[in-house]
Length: 106
Image (tube, rainbow, N blue to C red; front, top):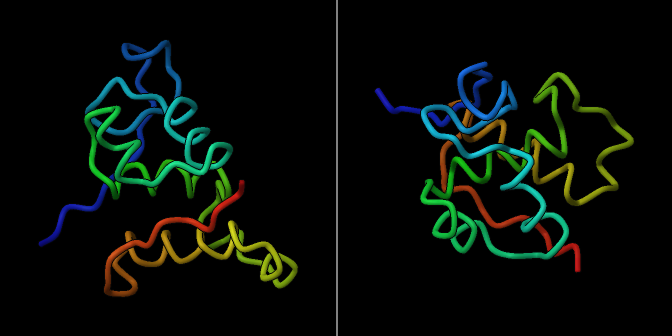
């Protein structure tokens, strides 16, 4: 069975901030380089010592925090939110295939 990346809140790590599970890497540190600076998932993963899928999940959570439940018709116009829904679908095991890099926001 495949291990899907997860996010976790642990009061003993980063003062209870949302982090990539099993690490001390907060989502609030991983997402901005991808969303605001347009860095690739692989670049950010290398910088923080986590996997590309973990970075994708952190970014998707930032863009669309409620996952597939948040899917709404008006979001289809925002490429970043459409990408986030695709990430939730793939990493949740509902679809096969690799996670692509998000659309450039530069």
